[in-house]
Image 1 (spheres, rainbow, N blue to C red):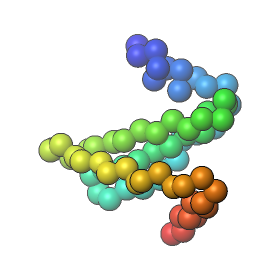
Image 2 (image 1 turned 30 degrees about the horizontal axis):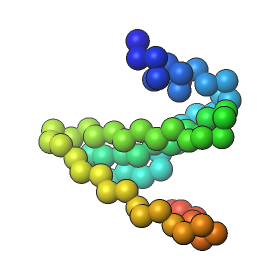
Image 3 (image 1 turned 60 degrees about the vertical axis):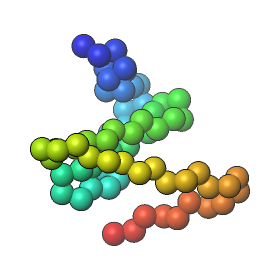
Length: 69
């Protein structure tokens, strides 16, 4: 019933979210939206609170490294 969550689910772009990172009990999911933005979900499946550290913004013109597995 949360309007924001429903809007992400029903975005007309039709792309699925993807697991970006995970380490057991915590996961980061990202979904590209039709307006060019990206929605991010932080999921904690553990019994205790989790702390999240966001990377520092990169200076304009710096390339973000590609994630490989």
